[in-house]
Image 1 (tube, rainbow, N blue to C red):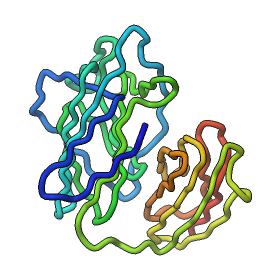
Image 2: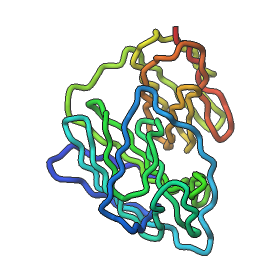
Image 3: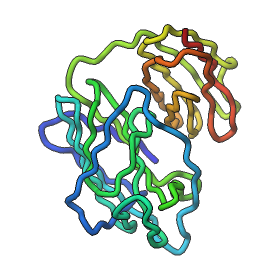
Length: 245
């Protein structure tokens, strides 16, 4: 999936991409998801999109606000949204998993999503299509998703620590990175990759998709003491050994 950038403008910005979809009995309903300090992210298994169905198409309208909120309007064809959690649904139906900055912030059963608790600055938003069993649909091994950067106006907080990592097909360039930060620090982990992969910081449960030729930033507050590993999910290769003290 390609990344797109949404800028904070007066009017909503609309982008289209081949890869996701919807149909809802209540298209005007809204789902509200709120950011927390560490998020509740976790890895999801993937399942291939049914071969007898067309790959869904997705559009996204995103409107950021200076009060730390944003309104998303998802338009999807070829995929039917469930009315709520626990619904069995037909083949090619389900709900959406929403993540912000690698944090899994909730599920959406409606095409309109309201995000709360966003700090000023750039936030990476990902919406993935999931079956009723929470397995993420994938086409040719790539999750059916929309990913974009959303800019919230205001003074951007400066990170206390910045960790730089480069990865390629064999793992981290130069060997596993060792880093130490203080409890309470705002941390940015900048990961430059030559391969498409998922990176996961364990316990903090921060995840992000790496795109070849791009730098992806994981941002989190180091509010859990201990020693933690970050790894490339596919090959299970450790890339970071992080101490929080």
